[in-house]
Every structure is written in C-alpha cells, then in structure tokens.
Length: 254
Image 1: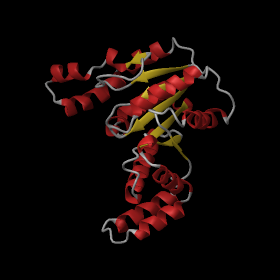
Image 2 (image 1 turned 90 degrees about the vertical axis):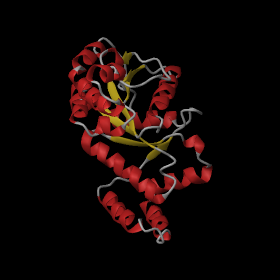
Image 3 (image 1 turned 45 degrees about the vertical axis):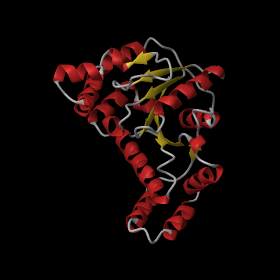
Image 4 (image 1 turned 30 degrees about the horizontal axis):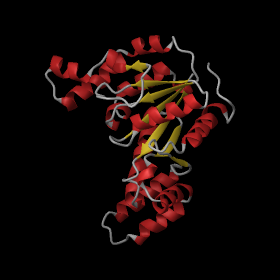
C-alpha cells in the first residue's frame, strides 16, 4: 500500500479532496482507504476507514488538560505520535493500493512538529508522498503564489517525501486565472515578469529574492488543478501518484 498525505493551510480543501478522490478511485475500481488524522474534525465529507479520533479527541484533550483549542491542538499532535502504534496495527489489517491521509487543518501542527516525522516513519516514508494543496485565492497574485510555493517547499523539507503540488478548488477561479497560475509553474520566467510588472509593490523586492531562492532549489514544475466540487483533475492526480510510486505502471497492493 502507498500513503498519500494531503497537506495544506486551513480551508485549502484537504478533507473535500480526500472524499472526492476516494469516490473517483472507487468508481475506477481502484482500492483505497481514507484515514482521518485531524483530532478536531467535526464533520468529515467521507467515511474514514481509520479515524485518529478513536484514540485522540480534541475536545477531550481540552477538558482533561484545561486548554483552549490552540493549546489542545498542540497536545493532540504529540498524542497522535504516541498512539501511532494503534493506528498502524489497524492499518495492517487492510490490503489496499492507496491510503489517503487527511492531515490536521492547521498546517503547522502536522508539518512543523517532530511528531509528524514519527508518524511518516511509522507508516513508511519510503512508500509515501505528499500532495500539497495550494489555496487558489492566495495563488491569484504573484507574491501570493510565491508564498504558497515557499510553504510547499518547507513542507517537503520537513517531511522528506516526494511532493505533488495541487491547485485546489480550481472551480472558484475563471479560466484566465487558472491558466495564469498553471503557467507560473511551467514557466518561471512568466512569473518573474509578472512580479516585475508590480514594481510599485513595496514587497516586490522580497518577493523577487524569494523567487530566486525557489528557482535555485527547483521548486517550480508541474501542478495539477483539481476541483472536489466538480470532480475534475482526479485522473491527473492519479497519474501523478502512479508516476511517483510506480513509474507510471499500474498500482500493486504491497
């Protein structure tokens, strides 16, 4: 089985994409299970075969430790790592091709704490990849786009897994906006040109330096535009994961 971690900022559409992609895989005859790793999730738009809330629940942690939501989320992140053996034991009872892992809503609680690497190691780093969901509203401007790509690179640096950038909720963008964002990935010179056009922006100098840093580390390349609402881009998401795990061949279940 192969692990796909869906990571992104709050509101980027992680849970919706996990649910929509799971539906697409089911219809395509591809076996997959969904895992909820958000202890504070109120409602999930999919049926989770494995749910971290069975062992770690945000509201119970708030009550037990007399913490507010933010402090409790930090404690939950560490408790998830402490309970990872229970999760892996249950996961071991499944024989499936893909495990879709819905990470906590707050990006920093998963990607930037040591507990995240404990979890990735326990589930198998060598058979894992990360799908980073870039928020389309942030990516509409060149500086916002650079910010999203910086976050993506930081997540990849922290998790040390292959990274797939995903432009989520693309249905809220018009065709021209979508095409521009996709062109920024494929052609960094186009992005640089658009940044220079905004030279009246006092943040442009910082953005330009960040752009150079991102170009030097090879952060640009392919991105998949997807819409959970319209279920578009799912085939491209599957093809990208196949390429990552199997070099484009059909998935196995080992």
